[in-house]
Length: 383
Image 1 (cartoon, rainbow, N blue to C red):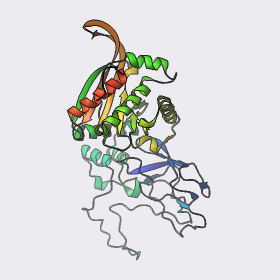
Image 2 (spheres, helix red, strand yellow):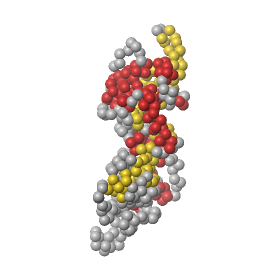
Image 3 (cartoon, rainbow, N blue to C red):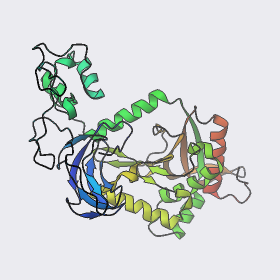
Image 4 (cartoon, rainbow, N blue to C red):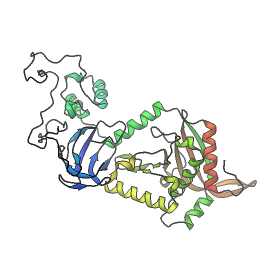
């Protein structure tokens, strides 16, 4: 079971896209896995014959546990493959050769000596043993005054999960979907750990409006801004976290929360290519066909709320990134032009930064370059 996120402990196998005995190629979609963030397609890590499938559709499996083998030509499967631990209460599937999976043991049941099958004393396991449990379950148990060591878990390896604590306390399950809870945890962690500071600029959007009018029909302001952001990041690598790739995440609202699909190598793409890539990502979100690579590797994030009529806002950093750009709507405002009032389409931008990675002067220099690119001033030399 692959790890599709930094805080992921388990993954739910939604369905296999290949059957046992099928030939698979490296990079070919192999299965769909559901995490707290989304349901994504997982590609095959190698080329060969899919064999020894031990996880069934609907199983929750611990990250890192084998769920199948890909055999090279002429290679045979081993005589036994351990089935992954699953939620208790589901029927145990055979490990591929008719050997059932033993259910996990919980604290309070008699333990057996290693390898001999003779029961030890009838005393329960030592109370000092820390029971396996998810961080959410531990926090919820603390909030509700429950002793988590007395709960029987339904998770992988008998781990106590959030729903086990909810059931034990007799309270209704939380209304928030998993994606929303994951989003809440991510922004809370980022706001707590990263020292945020903010840089604001107002942009004359006259050139942006004109460029969209003469550009590709399907190009949005977001596409044009991503193109400019990528160019500015090449000049200011610290704002990109000093990463070698410029991969820009787009904050996208979905019914259950927020997703941030990533445009890989944005600095190498034309506006037309950015349009195509954005549409491809949005189509995958709509169809529930996101791949793991679509949500990983981001080095900078753009959040645009202009389509909602928002003038300006500040955004919380994506965990591990140096900056996120928050963009408001383009609207006509009265501004001073050569000392006289004039009406121009303008746009407010707010740059949130992690002070551990970048300081105010460098953030301001990045914004100078970005504004110059968006306005394409003929007299302004790019910093």
